[in-house]
Image 1 (cartoon, rainbow, N blue to C red):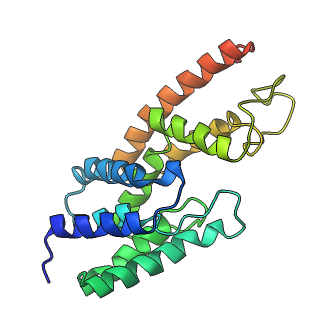
Image 2 (cartoon, helix red, strand yellow):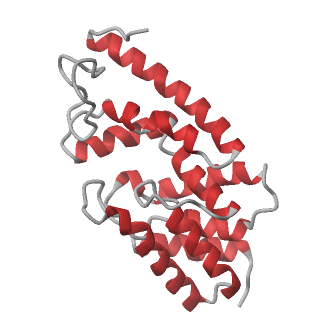
Length: 218
């Protein structure tokens, strides 16, 4: 069996398409963007196993449960098991399966698993980078629409007099989760890119609040 990276990328893309659902925030384009971000990070960490990183980028959402699903925190473990089983049957290098499984398990914010390998750190950072910036913003509002959330609280969009609630108000998700992501990045390169994308996102938030009728507080 060939171990050529191009071959395995095609295999992983096919597996991802076979198990794809109807979530436009976690579609093949998302997987491709995560791999694109991971390639940027690999430039800073050439010692990482690029084959493991690539396969995990394409297969990390092989099992994808909605954000409000009670077992969402288990989805990455289920995805890891399915990915390893499918790739083992396809002849993927056996000595790389454990690293692949861990990278998939640890990518998830909901699972709260600390990545123990450089490959897992890169995959987690790359996935979180896709939640930031312009594409991350589009994914935020797409997901909020599917969950029937409002754009923002009508009278207190900054949550100055109320608790934040990103299940009801899409704008709250920037503060509740997205603004925290750069600090959780496992790699220095990931933090740098995350901070750049968050800066753009915060500029959007300020503009949104101004147009909403409530200028941002200093």
